[in-house]
Image (cartoon, rainbow, N blue to C red; front, top):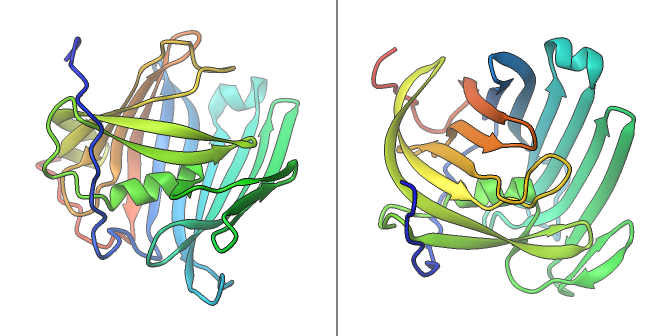
Length: 248
């Protein structure tokens, strides 16, 4: 679908009920060419902490290198977010990243009453619906995208490293995609990415989401500085709705 025209950003409606639930566990294999480079695990739990008197979900994302990649460049990353069960907006976000000899950690607090967001470096204004990266993904899953047209996009604001960025997500159409769990009807999206240590200036990221009530990623493909990475779903447990492949 090269040369697709991007239409004006659309305001999408959030479904009344989240499409996920506590107990959901998703696992992915990240491949560099034919080699397994890393494993990623996502899980949703009930939060032990209430925020502003409200119950919350605690979402944990763990990523770690595998095989020979773990020998030459060990990665152990954890991202956590605590989101309101009704609005799905984050109250708190934490990350702890170990990539080779490089280490980074941060803790972010979203104060919705005073419209401020705070991390270890300071306090910043909080305007409207602003997410961290994991909560943006779970919020996007709950948006009603059934009436989107090819080339149409929507935006989500997220806080990262002391500033608010815009994540643009363009709808690319429907495709059938296979993974180790079978073949699924999917919706294809093209999220924007920030260039940096891994991604090139013009890197493209494509994401295939199940065209069912679950809206879980089945596959992702992204260009990096050297080559490309592919992520595929390897396990799905505790889903709110049945995950039914077209065939194995």
